[in-house]
Length: 356
Image 1: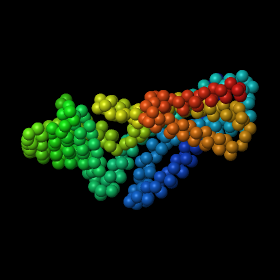
Image 2: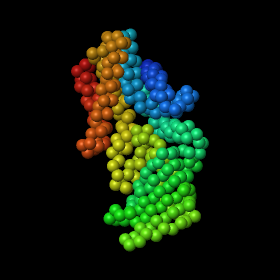
Image 3: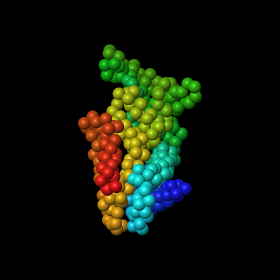
Image 4: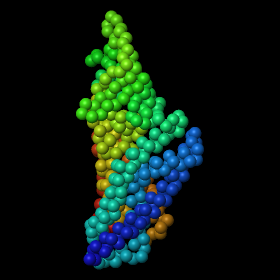
């Protein structure tokens, strides 16, 4: 009963402090984001809508840092009131305290997964769609400005995607095995047909067949295209950047890029970053506990905040340092993501042996 009460006591303090940290930083970041959006062609209400739609993504990105700072403040408060010392004198080991931190970490990871995998990507897509509709004063256009898609020998340009998933201004370029252009299609639009035999139907098609000695031009009212991409995948590729995608969408995008022999490292970095986030949160919480048990046992709130912010920035800079290295120096994306987390755990374990 004592252990269960201890776990709940620590969890209540950690979750409460983490919530305060999240609210404080989200409020600050939202003000900056609102100012940034107002620099564009948006009204105050439009900018506020965009900020509201992108807030879940900011919360998800902030979670590791917020969990670390929240744990640092919560345990520091317990230490200031002598509660942490009583726990240690009562025989509660560092390992047991770390076990108590698992409960709030599980809650934070669960909420983070709900935000980052369900609501965040959906709202990010809605935000980008809202931007397009606002700029072009159209409720039908979902994506505009053009995007490219590759599938084997096919290179396709799409001018826009309407809300129903139809494509506008489609241009297809087909190459042979030597890389020479052999077929070109230009269609005013394309409609996706789902079901047991999914395919696209191109409308008002002008087809150009290119041979060595002549060129033939044909016109079609409709023409079938058996593309592997669907409207959802196309919108995800165009609308939402890699760090903002869900794990499922990232896995699909990585599979597509590997199939087409494209560089998928940026998506792999984002993918492994999401998978290893629970380890990052727990490692940062472990580090916060070591700080409080060691050099920061009797310091004030201001110093704890300063150390917490600086440590969070160092961790973020390490992440930003090793992520590009996976592309520049061909470093494995999993290793690039794991190095900052491993360093965090290493420092925490060294501190635990020294200060406890």
